[in-house]
Image (tube, rainbow over all chains, first blue to last red; front, side, top):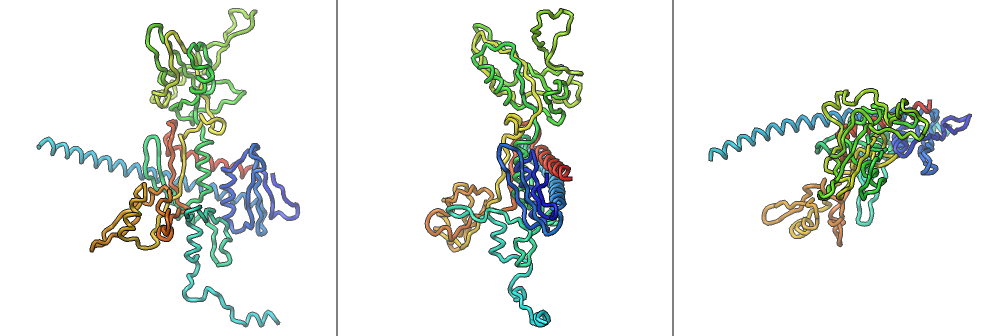
Length: 117
Length: 380
């Protein structure tokens, strides 16, 4: 739900239901990074109700478009995080498998030397 | 006329001076932007300067575009076990890291026991206490294979898991402890029958049952390899004395941690910023020994300089717990600086067993993406 002025659509307050700090803080962060934004912030009118008010003021672009772009950016960031994390986990598992093989071969050679003594 | 005269005047800019670094923040501002300084009384510069125009008057663009983020973002896994993972996320902001942590704790779905149908309970543990304890037992099953059960749905094999617990302590035998491995999985659904209050019901009418399983859950290939059991077989549920009996059926459904903590898939998930310990001046000899003995986690080390002189170095800054022992006392604050790097997070996730921890994190990121999509569709 957008509360703004009919004449000037560069500043508006968006009231979203069923949202909380999880999504609101993340969206506010990506909004701040956008150079078209002059002011952005969010507030939660009452903690018992799951409602968030996000205020966006821009340098002329319609506030709705800027908010949509910020959400898109956040989605792309999340996808990149997921990709990088998966690659890092795979890399870690692969390097650990190599280390386990090396330790096994060292152990077996150590046992042999003990037996010979 | 006046403008013409202004253009002819030579413009002097501070950036033309030879020793001012162009396009970069001066070092003290860079410190303010990227580090939290943990002083003796309180940390300062804790907020992250996200506003894209924060340094506009200096000609520096603070907006982090997606390509810069993609280039600088790194993940390094430090430890990965069956149950927990510790990894570093470098180049991300606290807002996003906190969103991941909140989703991991409260919004990842799991299966947990919700309805307990008690046929017989003569133990000293009350019914509701027993039901509460059963709800908290973690179940080793992938919650992505199940659907949510809403009020209008009938419980069937796609949204319910049925367990049975029937333990009896015979008279004359010693007291027994009921552990979670006594919970037996019923892949064919509930065996109990609903009581019909209708006195005029004829014997030919079918008795109502609690779950409507179309096919046995054993036919699903994942459950053939890994039957559904509680993750830990040694969780004490109740204790029975001689002559006491517990007979019950427990139905597990899918839920999220926001509704009740039993549905939280993590024991806990937390992050901390990477600590940075900097020696502002050279610390030698006795002072070095004193510094090394002060730290309870051995962050500092002594290195020999030769000729009997020793110097203190920072060996393990990552282990620092920020107890601030090294800056307690006179003058130590001038010698040691404790800082935290604002965009380097050490994440630790401990899973309760439903899903492996690296899968949990991937699912949490997917859920954040879904939330963004929902916001976008609400706006359009």
